[in-house]
Length: 123
Image (tube, rainbow, N blue to C red; front, top):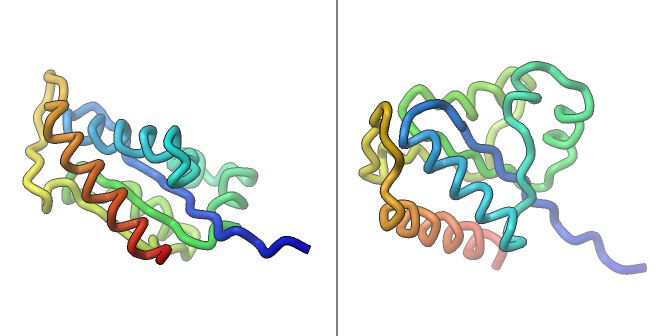
């Protein structure tokens, strides 16, 4: 039988600020590139059974928060879950702005850091 491939699930805040939308963009890119499987953090926070099961079944959880409020981390904590890797984009120099889009070059930098960190954890 083939050994179980570790499952990495990524969650992001996806609020209305530029930082939140950047966190969501990075999570989508991790999903689309096959680095992690993205799931719905609002479903975890909203106690949706199927989505809580996905979180509980993950071998590794990556949480991306756009600001110090750390809503993604808090949603996981409601179910006794803690991310294996947590990234608060404000600690990476990303400013939270309202009514504007995020800077693509900053998002590319953040994606690189996060993807590299996940790869290192898998090695």
